Image 1 (cartoon, one colour):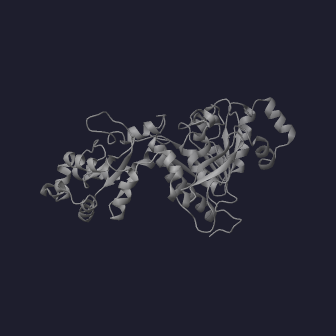
Image 2 (tube, rainbow, N blue to C red; image 1 turned 135 degrees about the vertical axis):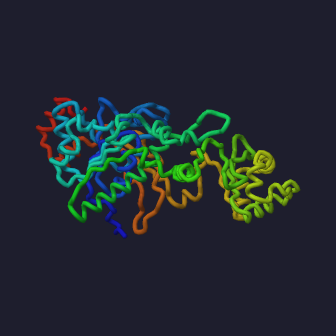
Length: 407
């Protein structure tokens, strides 16, 4: 348990040279929970997420996108041009200052810059360096560059997501970008604990595809054991029926329902008033319901169509039948459970003002965990980081500015 004035990662120093999603999301865990995280960027080539909306007031700008701001809370921001000698020298100072050094560029890129692991270890013998890219730092596919959409495709997520009579649709967003940080943050924490106990640093080669494949464990095991290749099957399940998202009253309103056991099926029929169609012996077993799912879905949809999604959910949940409203982002902002858990936190950003930011998917006993302050604007903390953290003099900073090292 922490005290009111102490956070779990107080005193931990992190040099965050990563960009896009995986690295920044992983270091956000450390930043929100007390670590001093310096987010290193460049005005010459800003993080591409700064060019993705939604923008505050629909006005585009590198500091106005919530896609970037929501992923980089509680961090200090500096701009360094690594293509200048002076910029590279500052980068080395940051690495020497840090306990953890994270980067997420193409395999070998940081070594080409002159700040790979061997250099980092010379500067800081106990440094924990993390390199994360799509396929890892070694092997025949290590130079395969791309984003989570590509890793999701190579991993097999796209083959199993969508409808059987349509091309692969893929999961929403760059899925492996969302999965991998949960693995990587835990790995970094383990390395920090190891360093605390032994004084030893290490190099972590984190392949995004490998950190995500565990989510396909059932499908991989099915192939290894049974030789079965799983493909797209819409919202349907091999072990439950009804199983899917069903249209409700209102414009484009839906409720997800999953009947997994015979007890749930009996309760499902009870909620519907034991309709005559539900007495059909073909629906008496899970296998029978799966085989007749087209017809079954029509019956279920005819019931849900007369109710709101919340009415469907409430009636079924009261009888122990798994169900949930298909919510939009606007619905989530009003969700009573998320409000009770204080999931969204209002933070004051230097350019976009006060906006809600997402918190974490857990609460920790002993303190009110969550984002501490808003994400940095480009170069917002240059002076503070260079002076206060790195101990650079006014003359050194002036020379860096003249050399365009802070661009």
